[in-house]
Length: 366
Ligand code: KG4
Ligand code: ZN
Image 1: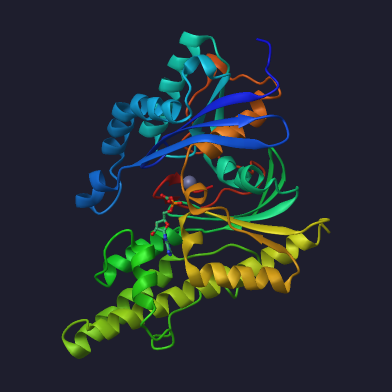
Image 2: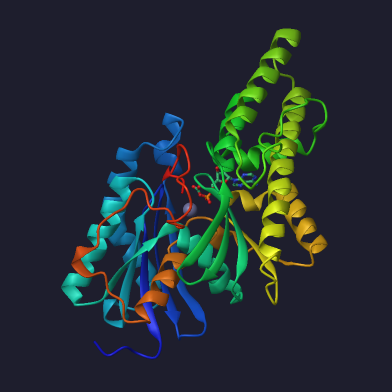
């Protein structure tokens, strides 16, 4: 196929609980988002207290074609205007990944278009290139409901993991914390709002792994400590008063904030050792919406004379524009995974880094 100067790429994302499709135009230097459609499934899973993989997979299979149609319509295009397809091939829940990969293969085969499988984490990691054309190498903290890792992004396909969570992801911890203190889901925004009226010093919750060198983090002990503090309040007062709820939320958020900031300071120091010309620290993931966490990371960056980049929230959380963009970088080089593409539920971005423990809400964490 003769490659156009500007590539128009259809992106497809279905690795967790968002069915998403987007169209991105890439001219080799910069990219433009022509459409970005995300259909969340929160309502479908609400009654179960977490994502049910089977329900997620069925919903993706039922909605993907409609979602793609919506993305094409918003971009004022038909499939005739698409030069290639990029689909999330991993990591994530196998059912959702298969739904996306099969749908993408069907379209690519029917239209004779090139097809590339994209690593979902690469999509997040390359978002600051899409939004701000950030120069390599930059430091990225991916902090969401399913992921938590510090990466140095060296090039389109070279990522160095400095560390990450060894158990829960921060968003997952916020969601569990909200459940423990009687707040609604998603827990992050609820805990943040409730914490505004609270005293962050009332409960002395742990700051896990700060005594261990490096950038690895752990959040499951923090959740257990919150459970104990809550049980103590209930035993003392016969229940949780609004003030207790606010103090618990504030104490929990302060601990999360301290851990992320302390580990970010270490990651920044490692990154700064590379002497990048224009040092930059970017965040991605739903937890990056948290005001105090964002403020702490911005302050750290300012102190380290490093630009702080937080892309708009709709591009920080799961979306297909990031997948289309990451795919466009490969399609522009003439790459095509074709019909041999398969889903990889576990797919670490940095294949050389040691495997991380545990598996988060989105399946494999790293
Ligand atoms: O990136 P995201 O949409 O993808 C998933 O991991 O699905 O992140 C969602 C996560 C949820 O766990 C949510 O509680 C958390 O991000 N979150 C927040 C805030 N807003 C969303 N956590 C803390 N503070 C917030 N303001
Ligand atoms: Zn994600």
